[in-house]
Image 1 (cartoon, helix red, strand yellow):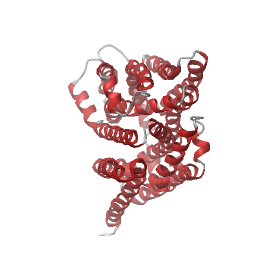
Image 2 (cartoon, one colour):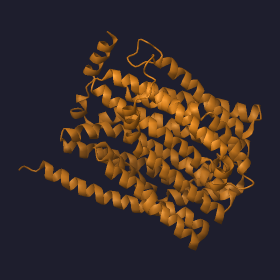
Image 3 (spheres, one colour):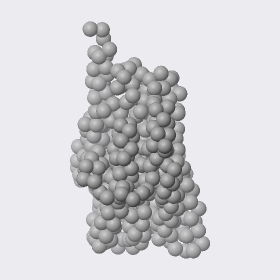
Image 4 (cartoon, helix red, strand yellow):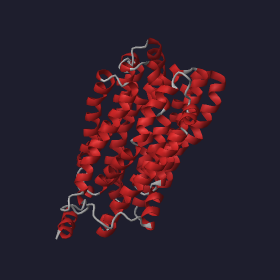
Length: 460
């Protein structure tokens, strides 16, 4: 009876409106929840930096920045399972293969537990060498280690929490996934000042607040999926790993995994370059700049998530005029968002970075870095939308090409070459130069695709 009820619910929610309703209305409907969730996720990272900078000190900010690549690496393995399984879940529900969907739920839990444990153990064993390789010094290694030890002990919680949240979104509960994310951010924001200032736990307190907030949301998720009245719920027999589910999930999740790995490697190069030519304060400055830029990037990613189903549905229906329309609106909105980031970063950098620290040297370096990094930001929104657009219309090869070219083909060589001539400035200017070149490549590829759309719509 419950399966039939769920079947009827799916049938009644077939997204035919994607091909008929006004594009602007659809984009608002689909994008706003995603933007809220993404903004909450970015604030989740920013809150720790603000409280650590003000409650522990400038060197703690630098120590936190050292941990970014390792956190990104953990996220890469998380996305390998979470994104792949979530996509597979959507497909199986669309095919009305509810037994497979149940098994995917169980396999996500088990896979995340296994990967979480392995990543935790290996990272803890080699933590000091890893952090030194990422750019730590004798002054920052203690802060970075104190923070990452707690985060790694809670890595199993993080992986399972993120994996189940991805399943929530893909199984028809995007608002519940959003609520879980927002609840985690709010709880983390409440616990941070208590653990850092009141209990005087320092940078470890920020890490403990992060893990405790995730534990609270995970408990709610486990309770939700334990409800036997739900179509998807935990029960005996779904936790045995199935070779096909595991391999299919990992294959689908390989694209975001590779992109996260590339991001991890790029941050390592940036940290190493800044350590070599600017020292600990330069790394701390990048940590602040990275957090600020991340807010605007996450908002655009949320906007992209809203565009995806609209562009994909209409592309499948060969309604290329609607595909072009939603793309143009998304580009305009994304450009406005990143242009706002550019204006704030270029004209008001000092007040913005002062939120993170009171150290005048760190404020000066971060304000200067923010001006440089956000210099090409007005066109970054365009590049991000175009890359995601190709993913939305079933052309992941072009999407991966646009994402990886920016990081591996453009930014990596610039980070190797420019610091040799311009030292610390060379590290900073590498980022906007790579953004500008990547945007030009995205424009060329998009114009080529528009040409194909026009040919497809011409009468034969």
